[in-house]
Length: 139
Image (cartoon, rainbow, N blue to C red; front, side, top):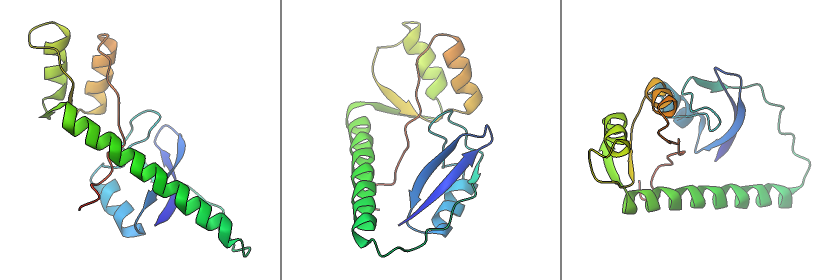
């Protein structure tokens, strides 16, 4: 695993873990890396201070354990969403509006929405959120 400092187009800086640098490049190109602050998918690597080994193996092990814990928590969130909500794919914004206006049954849904669609939903008073969607452990 490798951690990168990332920066979105709105200058939000955050960390993300990837199996390797190529995985980040591939996911960023497909717009699968999302800023957890604003949902922007225009993300690039930020300048990072070099990680100079100080012989503190325990610190590194602690950080790795912490990262693994976060990944397990995100995997559990994904499992909960998949088990308890309906996948509506790219029709997310349309379906969210139907639920909000009482045109269809109220239920939890998940899917894909553009940044513009998410902003429009929020402007209409429809609450939505962006969840960091980690790959399944069995992939």
